[in-house]
Length: 273
Image (cartoon, rainbow, N blue to C red; front, side):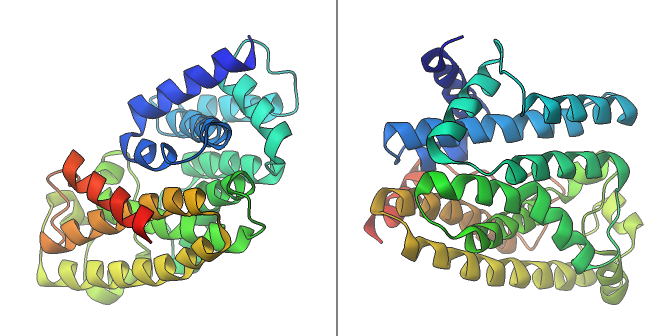
């Protein structure tokens, strides 16, 4: 498979599976846009395996197979072809990609997190690594800031996806914080929006905002179009968090959705920065 066809496929996947993400990368010049789509497609592959219906042993086997494919000829797999070309063009660090796989493996082995240090290490693998993979494409040598921004977005995901994660048998909210705020897992199972739940989730939102503010310092190191792209991602996540807060942290009826008009406002604000 030639790279042009492979890039067309990963861009199609990005438009189909990551509609919010697509609003950001459309602001990039074509070479950068295609490379970011290849990274997204790889991360999507990892997530689909880790969150799928296969037994955990089979999931781990497939993730390890994917790890091996990173150092082999890509063959006819469009994602691997596009990613291999993007790695050559932009020097995407191999350890950021293997860290993503480590995070997928972790999801097959661990479904509770004792404290925030434990959770942060996980977030660094599944989301901070995405930031580290993408930042060479954006053109900045700022992996720590990119990792922090990725962690911030993952913390917002955790707030948004409590019910979905529960359905997969996972609780990402730190166990010591559940205990501190007086929230039991039975409250999550029943979808109870109690005063204790509100306090717990307000605390989670405050921490996510702190990470977001720190991570957004990355924008000062990016060219205008890359900064607009990253600013759009962050703005969409910030707006989602604001919607969740407005709804009193009742995340049990499904994740909030942003209208195309709301998304375009975020794009406009990122461009105007």
